[in-house]
Length: 112
Length: 112
DNA sequence: CTTATATATGAATATGTGTTCATACATTTA
DNA sequence: TAAATGTATGAACACATATTCATATATAAG
Image 1 (cartoon, helix red, strand yellow):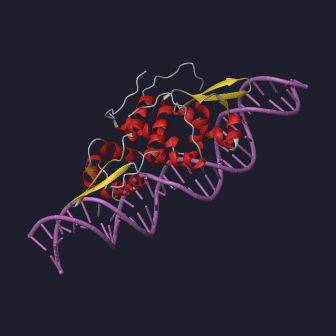
Image 2 (cartoon, rainbow over the protein chains, first blue to last red; image 1 turned 90 degrees about the vertical axis):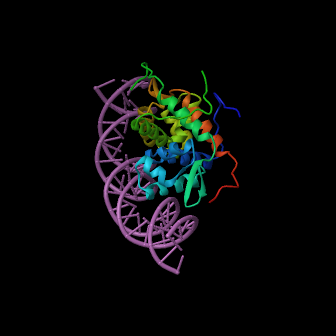
């Protein structure tokens, strides 16, 4: 499993850009981002997410629906509960990179 | 310059999550994402971005202001024009990872 | 200084969206 | 079957925001 570095990003079609933007937009809501983070390590049930993040189960469910639809999270039923987990590892990379970006020191030379 | 892989993401404060979400939200708009992509390789002027993406200079400028504020892009004046370019390389990595995510094959076993 | 070009800004608007509440569905247990 | 628990769904609302239009600012040229 390779990790690209310094790759030249070329987005083919216009649809591809929209598809990418949709994913970023999904991660652009604090509640949803926290839900994603809560699912990154171990599968976790809807109720536990709600408790851990202090959000209503209804709200969590709404967000989970979007994240499922975007193939960010996967759902697995265990009895009465449904456990959610990351569908693949790329989201973790995306977040790691963004964390690195936030930690980037400011360039004093820049205008603005 | 190292690239983390399989890192465990831990977001410290609540503010950190909001800060991250803000960045993702900025990339979540197709126009803005296209503007970012246009600035990734070489510095490009506001007018050229507008022409290349077929957007009004006003709209481009509005978006550029947000991207500057979020330290995604940097601005550099050259005579009458102002050239924009990526402030660091992390955004490129973020986009690369997300492209990889989109290209991820579907898991047939999943429910939904 | 005046004109032209390039970019930025502010207001206004239409559209999108996060959240809540009530309710429905599904699964387990009594 | 009935009750209880866990999750999902739909409507409604308040709020955010992407875009347009008009206008302002800044730099270069005449």
